[in-house]
Length: 514
Image 1: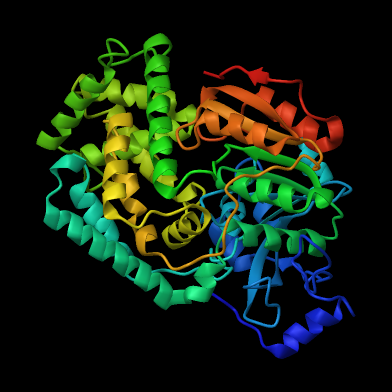
Image 2 (image 1 turned 30 degrees about the horizontal axis):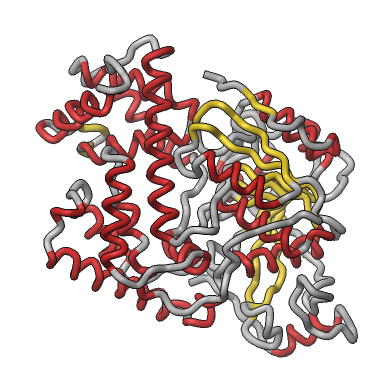
């Protein structure tokens, strides 16, 4: 756990920054933690820069990165209680800065620090020249108090064992073991950081932290790009601080009005929709496609998976079985630019041509894995999901959810519902709103992708309607989130908005790049 705590002396210094200001919830009045100064320093020394190497297309990106911290209360209602150091990272504007543009990359549990260090953000010249690009590790993530929970490996191991088993075929002993290991995971999280910290892990507190970040950056209004779960942070911020909101881009909207089971079932249905979009691309566009039709594609893929059960692929010293291929497909659905390669891979497997392109392609994916942005931290991911959504306490509800997910996508199944089972025994958390509205905020831009495998497009429409001040930009292709991924139509509309050009026209759509 990397959580730095502070005593009364530091608190007194912070309180002195706003003399005479009574404490109040930050959405209702002045906050004693406003007025902080960030001491920016280079993130990497010369040895670290040499080891990391330059980034193709932007060789000085890492050398220009600056890191700093601010202090936030773990409980915003108790400023004299436990404090947390929140880690920030910045890429200064290439020209005269007009202020900051803050990014959150989703999860929950994705580190903004690690994402900035992994590679340059693919943004247009206007944004790079005009804004300091800023990100942070949200509370409980990475350098902002990141933690692990005892029982994580046991939970992952059991989920791997029951993967592919129909929920109705799970024996009673397996259900009881699931309950025990999920409870052990919860207990491990409590032991790691305590119930008070978990109580305050929800997105309402991340939004409160974000307002302290905005203030410390010296910006009167927040400019923000939130991807996936980051859309929830941005939407909460707009509702809580409409007068402090500026241009907010919410790309890949999540929902907050369902419980953890319903949310996961809907995500699984979205994954199935994305799979069907990939099949349509394969049939209509790919030069080689192993499928004969939309109705037969899943069965034909199952034949390929059966082949891997009989003879796993051997790539770089390891074996790839059916679940490795399914995980590869799931990842491919998140990144539309990988669809042509995936179609060729499946065609090669169907033709039983295991050498050549198939092995070379899979090896290249393994080589590139270290260059990919970081995934979500499991402990923080579950902690925020359990805090942000109603959480049923009966295992029978999760069993029913797994059935519904299996029906929604027989290909990918209901295992992700079981991953949420720790929520059944999770400790109490701050009450999170189940609906958001921000009619008094400036115009907000919601971006939705029709074939998004992680945040179904319907969620983007719902969030746009709920906010009351938002417009929707639709990308008609696939992949998880759309801005900054080489889609010129989307990038132009978003950056025009960020630079002060206003929302695109009502119900603007951008065609697929494939």
